[in-house]
Image 1 (cartoon, rainbow, N blue to C red):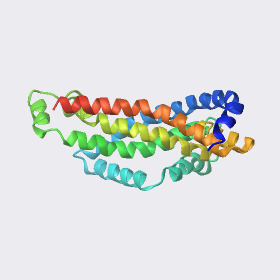
Image 2: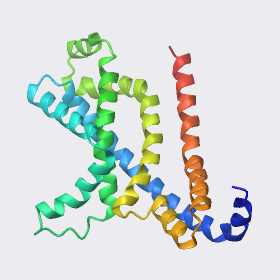
Image 3: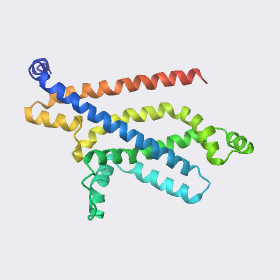
Image 4: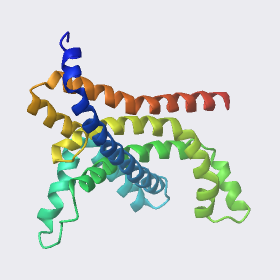
Amino acid sequence: MAELPAIYAKHIDRWLPELMYYCLATLGIAGTAFVVAVLIGIAVALCRVSHIGLLRAAAVTYIEAARGLPIVVLLYIVYFVPPQILPGWNWAWFTAFYGAVLGLGVHGGAILAEVFRSGIEALHKGQMEAALSVGMTPAKAMAYIILPQALRIVLPPVANYAIGLLKDTALCSLIGVNELMNDAKSIAFAEYQPMAVFVLVAGLYFAMSYPLSLCVRAMERRMSRGR
């Protein structure tokens, strides 16, 4: 550790700009996967609370399967399996970036589905009954009455998930995505300085995730005052 200042003085002007460039790639993967996970989570949560048994069964099966698999396994399945199942299709467009986004989104969708479901079920059932009694359809009642309130309830856990998702992007290097961890491994092994590089990368991950942590704390304080 005592040698780190000298190592950084020698190499930081080359390492830091390159690593910060790939921080943007990491943020891009995390942001896109978060949107995918939220969309999947809302859709599956609605199926989970549906009165249609087949939809509920399908939602439970997806949630249990996606949550029960490690993220690495999902990334491998999503990225490598479809081209083998459908070899006649043109998979040139399906880059490692899309595989990473879809793999993380599928896993996160299962987690957020349960978060959204708990938010929906936390509301009193009388609100849905009141909306139906004034002539709203179940879909409109869910869209205009239930979901807006549920989203307010689940904001802190969803934001916490976003922090975890940002860190989980490091696993995407295993399928060859050009993001922060993948570039850090290349630099570390090329320069024979793994400790210095990965300590620097740890600082960059912290710099990206800490603002999200502050936002989560602010939301939790605001919601605790609103109770």
